[in-house]
Image 1 (cartoon, rainbow, N blue to C red):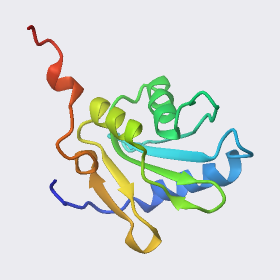
Image 2: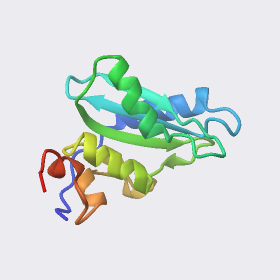
Image 3: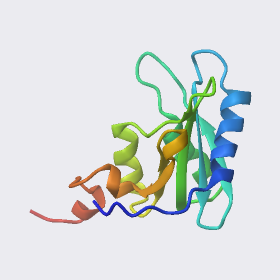
Image 4: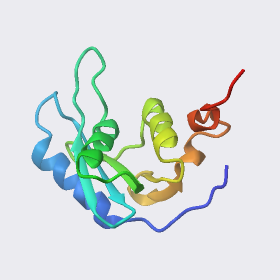
Length: 137
């Protein structure tokens, strides 16, 4: 774990918080995510809750970014509805973010401890899917 922190993108947090407060209604959509692309564009999305395990906001965000032609994400943040603030990604989202964007940074922490860390710091000694592609046994 590098424990290296990066500047906090407050505009990105505000974008996710705006989506959480204006688009998350009821139990179907309770989380919003925002990402800044390498080109500086901000992409947002909400989760799709379903009892069978619908996708988290971060996973929907990856698809939303792709539909806009954005395939390189620099920083990601998730924010809960009801003014819950920044919420760290779940384990599945951490793994998917690492697999798709191994250099992406993630904003985590409570209000007084918000920080930006590399995704790898959230998954120390993790399995990296890309490292095992094209390997023959």
